Image (cartoon, rainbow, N blue to C red; front, top):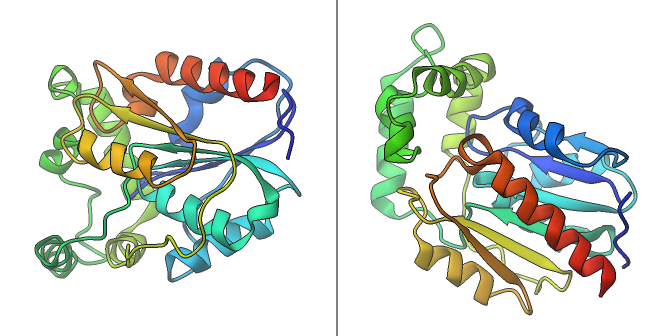
Length: 235
């Protein structure tokens, strides 16, 4: 499936992040490409969310998934392989939640409620950032406010989404894996596992950023993506 400089992009955000995650990325992109900002609001499982996103997407597109959005993106490719011209996975992983991770998520959901939910905690947010950004109150508040806007019900649903292995059908489209060198949530080992599981995928490591690559290093991330899309178009 050919990729051109006008092939639409479909962007899937991550855990408790909304469509504004991509503001800087879209602003930095060359003009002329159709953009579709997906969200995780419809569906009670990764496969259902992926199916709903596909329903609202163009006939063929380049699919970009960040973190949890990467799991959803892989599910979408597996369900609709003929529609995805290329796949970009940012700060994502193949791994399922461990039993301990599941318990921590269940405890966080039980500890909050519709009336008490105030977005992700400062501790959780700072852990997702590079140490140099850990004191950036504007950035921390921006991430927290996304969660507040999504609300407790979405927090509960997204926390409980099963991330079991989705590799039922090998991904055949051109794939780029982008990882952060200083990611405290997703290790470089996980990024290489993900890349190695997808035939002929390319991996790029971005320095000077934690997990939140689209917010911490949008210029570098955009250049990596634009350059890669240009390369696969030429090939």
